[in-house]
Length: 111
Length: 112
Image (cartoon, rainbow over the protein chains, first blue to last red):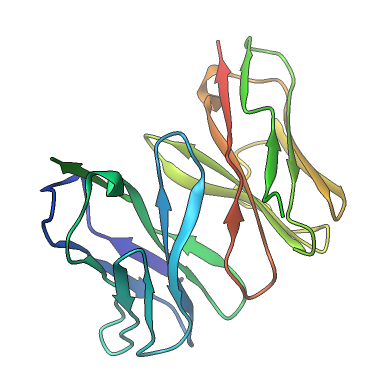
């Protein structure tokens, strides 16, 4: 079946460090891919998305490129801030409109 | 738009009591999802509706859980009787089919 696998956390970085959170997926056809962010005590918020191969989603300095050849959608940010501390979820929506979420990766950024 | 609205935001109840969680999806969204989030099991899909009809309830843990969507603007998730292991944050999300989901702020349920 379809699924999403993302890197285990927690991840701890110093402010201004480079961030990569790996995400790979398994799906038939051409799913849409998403990154969601969850701040403490809040619901998940859409961070960025990509709907077809080679698309790059970007928002708030975060980027992810839909790589069909490697079935990946890694999240990157060049310089993290303390305010980026949150849990990040990779997700896919398949052609049957079913959603699958990864297990989440907790990020803590220290000053 | 106000986004997805959930109530109550916090619920504390005793084991054996009935609990009802409520959700108002974003207007125009005709897909609605209920999730449960715990530290141990992460984010779990319980049930989802399309056009008020339950499409997949395979994630509903047991018969104590039930969900309804009587109209396009309201859904409930009921637990009866509640047990301590039901303690979790319950999220409702809505979507236009084939677009991203929008999550509500969640209901934190504590069963003592």
